[in-house]
Length: 410
Image (tube, rainbow, N blue to C red; front, side):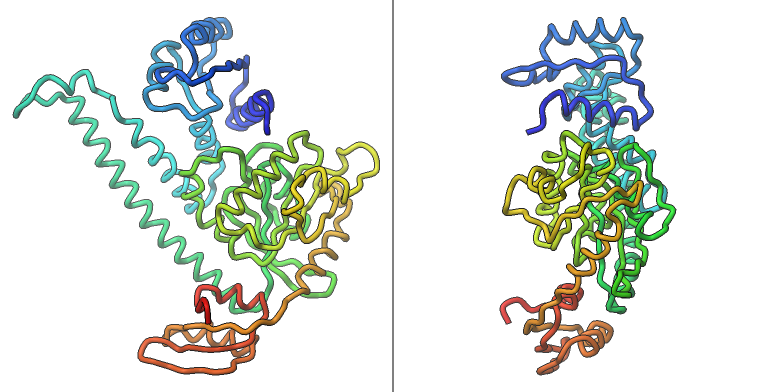
């Protein structure tokens, strides 16, 4: 379990990533949170003194604040108050580069803002009943809500168009029988540095959190001369806001659709075990928990002594039920262990067992059916007015590509 000190240290890194300079930190232990201010009244007074002493312009809390708590704290402290979710949203807004990424961040921000409009102008909205007595604050509040709802709907329509394009790109990639890998891991584990070393791509890679928001896909050549596709994805983090998980569905789809996950871990981090457990839990949450994994123990050049990948993996994983396909110790920065990683990927992807399966294809979609004929063995075909039903024997990689057409229980 991550300690309060470790959690606060992570918040410090997040704040620095957002461009803030941290002047002081404070921890309070309570049996139950204060409904009005989260922290106790004495702590609020102490915090106000710290704010004046350091001439601070913002106070950041490591937990999500309710709208009421945030308003009360801002009134008491007389500075801007943010919670962990707002801070992460701000970082995402700074990092988004593509139209899709910017839309995703804006959607998450608006969904976060909407319930926090409540109460603005309340003093002028309870003047009495009847026509002509509604306060201007209430009118403004309703106008703001309507505009936000309209903008949310417009963004969702825009994202659906973008996702449609991404789905078309994915189908085009799947039309070519190439295995797909995805880099996953806790934020700042070194995924983008590894991605650049694997593919030669120029993806942004720095020491700040969430350097990568928009999925990037590139080809790599394995030692067996096979080509595979690799995608770099957004880093996971403890208490990642649910609005962001929903907004970044397109990025996470690259993970779910992959045949192998390279789970990148910062082996030099004192919190590696907790971070790994969180990533595994998130993978289960998005439906990728059963996908084969290779545990990539990165930043091995920062680990003292001669690294033992098996011993490191046992310490970091802890739970034997989550044993990956293998563990490889590497340094994405120096290239140490890089060839061993490529060999491990090659060996893991070579296992592609055959199994009988059944599919139902819409009559107008010839591409998936052609793919099955080309890379599987068709046993039986029948048609009705809308669908083509096929019994076949197909490798696991092909079954994953066609999972959307699979008939369960046939």
